Structure formats: C-alpha cells, structure tokens
Length: 326
Image (cartoon, rainbow, N blue to C red; front, top):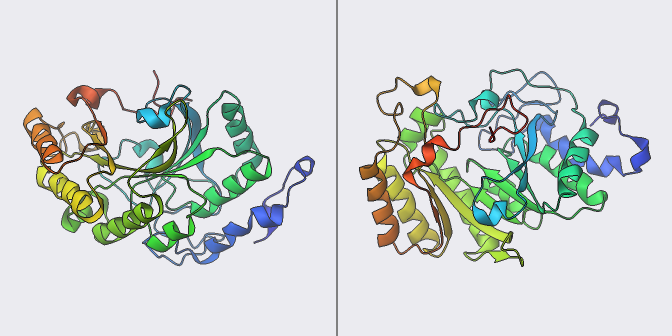
C-alpha cells in the first residue's frame, strides 16, 4: 500500500506502516461472501462500490441499543456507508445504497480517531462498528490506531450477518462483542429482498463461528454494560412469520436456547417500499404474537423483545449529526 495516500500527523508518532497494513487486503478484496476480488485501491471496484477510504458516515453516542449496549452513557457507533447487501426495506438507505458517491481516497483517519476519543472521554466504554462487513480492513486500522493511542474500549461488531466465516475467525481476540442480524432462513426471500441468494449458508456459518468464540453467556461490568459475548438480532418482516420462526428454531437447535436474542418488531416501511404489497405495512399484532409464541415455546429465556409500537421510534435521519435523535 502506498502510504503517501495516507498522510499521517507526525506529532502522533505512531507506527503507520503497521497500522495501515490491513488495507493491503483491499488490493484483491475477498473479505465478504461476494468474493469480488476487486482492487479497491484502484477504480476496479466490487459489489459494494467502496474503495480504500474509510467512508465513516456518522460517529455519535447512541443510546437506543439494547440496554447492555447503551448502558448509562451510550455506545460510540461508527456507521459505514454502502453495504454488501442491498435490502429493499433498509432504514439506513440514506447511506447504504451502493449507487451513492463515496470517497475513494483516504478519509481523515486522525479526524475519525479524535471524534471517537472525544466520545470515550464522556465515560462511553463501547465502540460499535455498524455495517462493517465490507470495511473490515478499515475497521482494523481504526482499532489499531486506538490501541496505539492507549485506548482499550470494548469493540462491537454490528453486522447484517452476511460475513465470510474466515473473516470472523480472524477477528477472534480483537472483537469483544458480536451483534449480528440473522435476517433470513430462506434464500429465495434473501434474494428477493436483499440480493443475497446465498445468505443462509454464509450467515449461519458466520454466526456459528461467533458462537464458538463467545458461547451463550455474556459478561457484564459493574454497571451491567456488556464486556464480552454475542447477541443475535432478528427483525420480523411483515408477512414472513415462517421465516422468523425458522430462524428461532435454528438458534435453539443449532446453537442454544440460552443465547441472547433481540427480537425486533420495529420494521417500518420507508418511502421506497411504501406501495409494496407486503413490505408496505408494519408487522401486525397477530404476526408478532405468533413469533413470540415460538420464541417462548423454544425455551428462550435471555434477551429482549420490543413493544409492537416500536416501529415509530427507530427511524434514523442521517442528515442530522445524531441520526436517531430528534
């Protein structure tokens, strides 16, 4: 990697060669299941259309996550732009669409680190990487820099689940908390709604590896903030109760009913799917009750469920400094 593309601030006196080493992988990118083999250091980009830059769209303390993540001070979340999935119903569509422009040169890493440091100074103890699957090398650079600067926060990998198991295996010992979505147990549905016809195979393999690393228990500190573990999220989609029930059965049968599951009813159609015959509405009480019944039948006893009215409380606006507030 030509480090002239990444001018450091010499006053930081860091080993920039080591810090930037993970970006070498972007010359022939295979970090996610797309396996594009794109040279992201050039104009030959892959599915996500993201280059070598960091493309961190938002950094802010988020207090709307699960209680063990938000804690009393919130979590410092970094939202990457673009995505290795293209979900028709994505609530983060303002930054996730791959057709949007994205910086292909080095963004200001030092500026990113300074923003994180300012948030950590407010007693925030967790740093979450949101949609990191296609930016794992850049995520590693940020982690390397924070550690070189003497910071040791809890790192959270907040992913859509569409990850290569080999990539997750390499994160063992680096990531303390895995926060994967498990969206589908039906590849036809995954192809139709998210352009991922092989989602099930990759997501289940990746989550199995996360479970192997962390097990079913989570470790928390004196303020009940998570320090290590895995929490599996599932967003219930309207009209797709059987998909949700199949996901819960996979977790219970293939992992353990003692895994922490966050069952979300917050689906709310964006303008892009407002006229869709199924995705154009929220989840009904009958649908949600049926999924909750399966959750209880399978013996899950750790995790969180949302109120059905939550659909109106989690709509971000990435044109604001704090997208989930206001």
